[in-house]
Length: 242
Image (cartoon, rainbow, N blue to C red; front, side):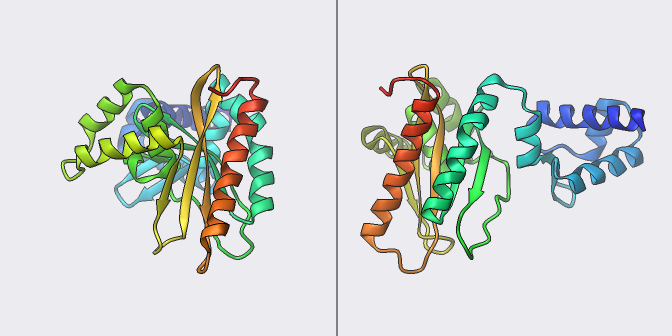
C-alpha cells in the first residue's frame, strides 16, 4: 500500500511538472512502473478527483482539485487562502459563477471556482487552457502582463489566429482595464478584472453571467460585482492598486 501511495504521488508530481496532457505510456516511463499498474493508479486518481482524463488517447492532466491541492506555490496558496472565501461570497451574492485564474507559461489555470447559480450546472471542463485568448481572464492577463509574455504567446498561437486582431483586443483591454466576452450560445457574458499583489497583476477574477434575459443594467451590476471582488481581494493581499 505504501509503495502504491508513493507511486501515486510520483504520478501527480510528474503530471504537474509536465503541464500538458500526458499519455499513460509517458507517465509509466517517467515514474518507472509498468503501464498496466500505472493505468490502475491513474483510474484511482481520477475517481478521487485529483486528475482528469481528457478523452481516449488524449492523456491525463491535473484536475482543478489536484492543481489547487498539489501546487505548492506560495502565491497560489495565498490566493487560495484569501480568494476562495471571497469568491464563494460573491458567487452566492450574485447567484452567478465566479472564477479565480492565473497564467503560467502561456496557459490559463483555474485556481478556484464557485457556482452560485441556483439552476445552471456549470462545471469547468479543463483546469488549464492553452488557447487562453478565448477566455476573458486569459485575454485580460495577457493584455496587462509583460510584453514579452504577449509576444511569446502570439508566436505559439495556431495559424488561424489573427495576430493583428488579437493585438488590437489587447490594446483595448489595456485602456479599459478589464475584459468582457459575450457568447450567447453558452451564456450571456463573462467579465474579468485583475487582482494585484506587490503592484503587479497576479491573477484575475471573472464572473460568468447566466440567464436568457439579462438586461444591460443587470449586466453592468454584475460587471461591477466582479470589479469589487477583484479590488477587495487585492486589498486582502495587502497591496495598493496601481
